[in-house]
Image 1 (tube, rainbow, N blue to C red):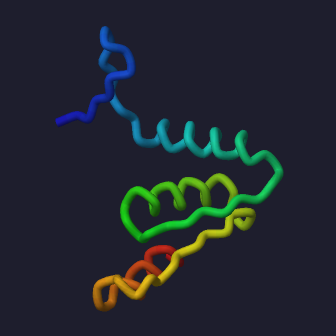
Image 2 (tube, helix red, strand yellow):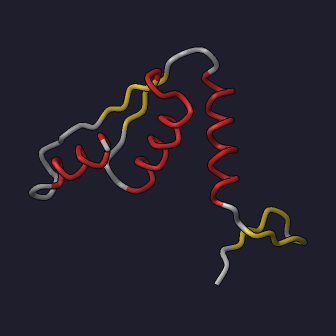
Length: 86
């Protein structure tokens, strides 16, 4: 089963994850330019994917933050730290 996206109501095109990643990394690089950026992540899928894309685009010019609010499930903080440092 293929994954499709609809960008125009009259056209359906196959979704290419590699192309999507390349496009988003390029967009981030254009937006940030030669500067630095910061991103906060909850450890969830959405913010972690954004952090991964930003890291791929910016490398050491990205500061990534995760705040332990004390409301995480037992062991979740360590799990998130492991994901973010891998």
